[in-house]
Amino acid sequence: MRGAVFDDCAFAADIKNTKMSGADLRGSDLSNLSGLASLHGAKVTEIQLRQLSEVMIRDLDLTIAEIPL
Figure 1 (cartoon, rainbow, N blue to C red):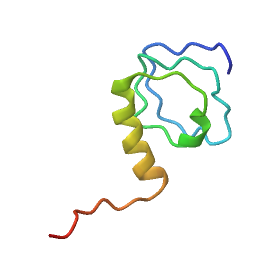
Figure 2: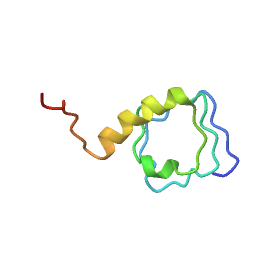
Figure 3: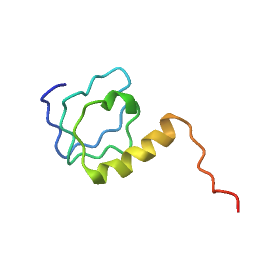
């Protein structure tokens, strides 16, 4: 997808087998996609990093826990 520009798109798909390297995803909603590793080399904003943290938690089936006191 090198050079592709996705502006104001709402991704709600599994992109695990898609190469998004070089794609410009700025301005798009990434919170409902699956396949975080496929975004290797894509261009995103700081705000989208928060959305991608939610994707990472889902994709990796992470458990978020507090540090014991």
